[in-house]
Image (cartoon, rainbow, N blue to C red):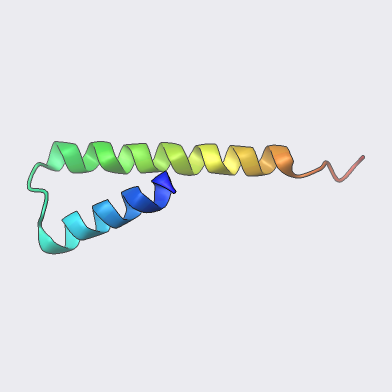
Length: 52
């Protein structure tokens, strides 16, 4: 849920110029990327090994 919330916030801020603070926008994007990486890592850990 947090990843989609960040997506919506970033998209809204980027499209309408809601956030004029570029540093804040970069921090939001970095946080979104971190969440995306964490989700991918969790998905990989749930997938069984093919060799097993």
